[in-house]
Length: 392
Ligand SMILES: [Zn+2]
Image (tube, rainbow, N blue to C red):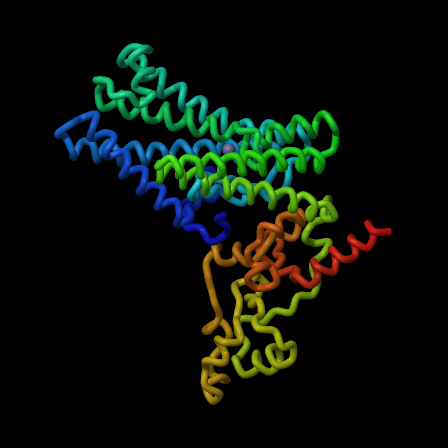
């Protein structure tokens, strides 16, 4: 699954939109297969077929993006923070900084994406039906080779692919949208979110296994690409459902806590103007850590300095150079990757790649001042404490 490592395309309504490298493979495969599809629809017009394939692939990409933005915007309206929208091998993912606070919110956020997709499919079908006839458009939408214009052919493909996207997303298999809607329903009925998650994730695993079995059957029947695709989707769905069930358990003791509740309030940071020889003695030798956060004169987090950056500088030059000159500096992106807001819910840490990569994540206030640090060791301690409390 994509994480903080995705390539940022830009921001829409303040929401970070990223793509995982695997998405380019999808775009390539779609463009390639569509070129041959349009080539059969418009024989002898290879350039047109290729252009239509590129336009269709781009519009498919936009459809998936709009679906995810549907989730994201509704989440934001309900006070849930959005970490970003990412496109990867199997479509899109909107990542949030916390779980929905109620079954109603979970339902609305989960339904918003499929609703957008249904609207796109309906609009494309409607426009095509106006250009031809509803009957002809129906044939075109099922990708039958009927005699239609280029515009109608693209509309028909978009209606088809969005209908397919809708059907897949509505499978009652958590963490797909249909599974989330189901979870919201069970949550509302039982009043127990974790039970609802276990139930929906159980179905998610079952559907995943069914898709794997179906994929193997297709492979045996000789459908290589279709079979392999189903097998992969099934496998990822199975794994995602298993992980989400674990996450629900893991997140339990964290409910209601924020980063501020668990962070070390006196983080050790090196000021930017510190000469390297002093940084080495006062920090690296003294604490023995492999890296330190770096702050500017106002106490704002500006980056990290790894020990290696100092090791690489000859001893006699270390008093001339300052930390600011050798540190790993970055823009907002780089700072966001290693920090979390102090008031973020603790669940947000589970989505932090810095925690895995560095073993710690920096806590910053709204102005970017370094206020604390959360280490994996501290989190483990918290988990053990809660585990002990649960056991007694
Ligand atoms: Zn969705």
